[in-house]
Image (tube, rainbow, N blue to C red; front, top):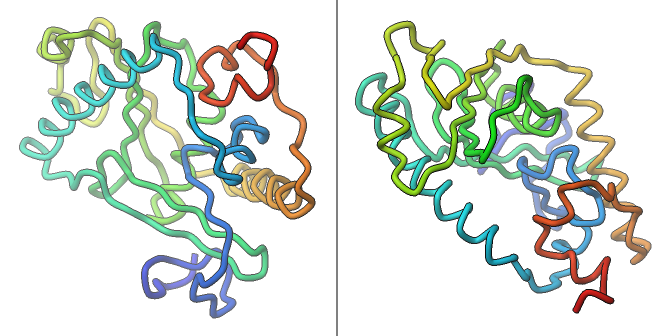
Length: 221
């Protein structure tokens, strides 16, 4: 990692100032390239109603848990970052849920994974790259319409390793190979964007949560 440049940090020492660069989001790391393409092209989002409910629950969960990390452990919340490369022709924007000596990414889920999802690790990995941190944490928490009922049962006595029912924490080391894979992923979407040809989608169970599903499955309209 090179030193900070105005508004962000460079992925390479190339003197970029970010002008005219395509903008990706850290949360898009290793996610469906077709979804990213549609977002870049400005297609309107059409979120399924059940997803809107989960998004609102997630916002409330982030707020309650974030305040604990801020007040008890002195973490800064919603830290904006930019990584940019004029050589690759794009920049990556992100907003870290909580950061102190290391970043913490909070994920609200209806069911908790046994292991972190690869795209969540790739997102956290971007934050570690920006912060020059050797490790970070993924906190998975069960979504609830009243998040305090879940968070009140969490044991913070061994922070940052925290435990509790309906909660899982994973320590994740920085991975330079994963970062390079993430850059290749974004670069391939950039080339598709320039060709104005949608890339092939991942076509997984995640499609039902996608705000651009209507573009891939027009027959459902």
